[in-house]
Length: 157
Image (cartoon, rainbow, N blue to C red; front, side):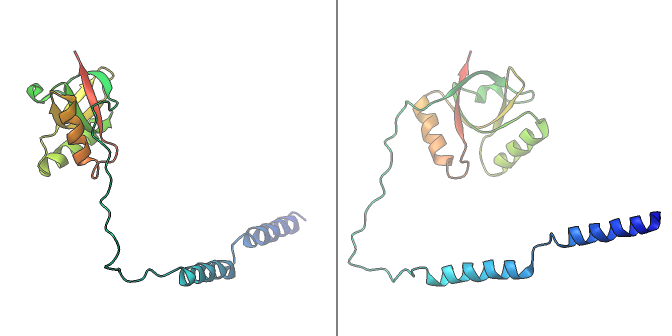
């Protein structure tokens, strides 16, 4: 009697889990719909020489960019003279291995990267440091294409 129940339960489980699989026809239908939309999308024509070329508009550079203010010091083994009032930070890590890895990679790419450590023990990977905020903003804007989340740190003494 127990064997019959066990066999019945097994058959029910196989049928229940077997019917949950998505059917190949559903994938095929979705693929065909996507291909149809792709083929009906408008195709861009060749460049017209008579069109007026418009220069891109850029934001005016201002010094009212938000900065984060922290008490920061050069991390152990770093040159403290390279850390000025305004720094461009490209990474922030609690894990020392990750911070040192990014710093070494940036040095390999030609940046004068250094590590700063705040009071909470977070390691900031700094690729440039300046005395003026305007220089820091210019530097941050220059690396913004490579490091989308670069930000400016104002050092508190």
